[in-house]
Picture 1 (spheres, rainbow, N blue to C red):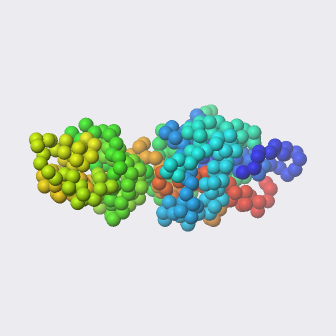
Picture 2 (cartoon, rainbow, N blue to C red):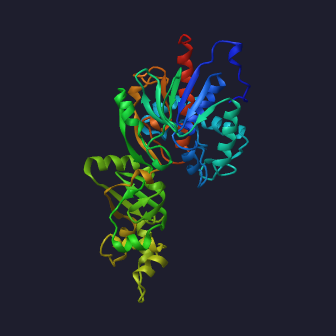
Length: 418
């Protein structure tokens, strides 16, 4: 992206056209920047007292901006939406997003897993620099503006600090987010508005979220918050290695999130999903049985599992949770490598990192303009796509914001001046 240039005064040429961006997250702010660079008068309308709240929250544990893997592999992370997302990622690929970040004075580094982070590791320095750039470009930001849809005259209807108000815009970009972390502003309240307007919107459901498992009272109380490291979980023939956290209500973490879409589908069909937990995926069953063999010499099961199988207390607890523990080494090794887990549901939206569902592909054109509302474009998590953690969520949000803005400019170029 180019260095910001001073905006031309309206008196020097044709009347300046106005763009409304609704939603002040990464997708909305990226759209606002692109529209302002094209010379439009841009106002961002945000329902919360400040913009970028979910963005800042995402950066608390380290802002995973994007991922360094090749684009052809990157695109596959979006599953069934890959073909739809691909043009957006081509418009703003990961390497370009990294340069954009560095253009804001925030140098980046690639972690050992290939994930890309700003050197500051937090989102706040990047957001401050970005808002300064947007201010230089003349972007206005109106907070505490709750979008209600359109009024009888086709104007955007808001409830602001002083009550109802209407806003006329030549073009609009909707970037209101999904429904995860609702306390930060994205609660999915827009779904009914767009459905009433005639758009097809898939139900919003939690994604990158923990699963519910009915632990015994002992396990739930004793091991809540304990990590399960270097494990593997299998569901419907697919195995994912990584880590998880045991919660009072189930499990959450990267291995669970990676299997999320398939688990969600199984729950929708059967009301439950069956997982198999391997507590020593780095060791074959026969080799593990050899380690477990031999006299116990009065050692407790917990000691045997800790010293011979290398299991943590929480892992040993899950071996016992699955039922009577077999004493024979091969049977015990089989239990360690195949602990059965039954998932009964998903955690709520307030514990979800993202959401799936949203405006369906059929409801927008190739520029992301709503078929039922010419001049209105949709970006970010409002669209019906999902991705795992690892930089893919933010990358697609940024890219779709830029793509929607360019689509808006393309559409606006064909419209006669008001």
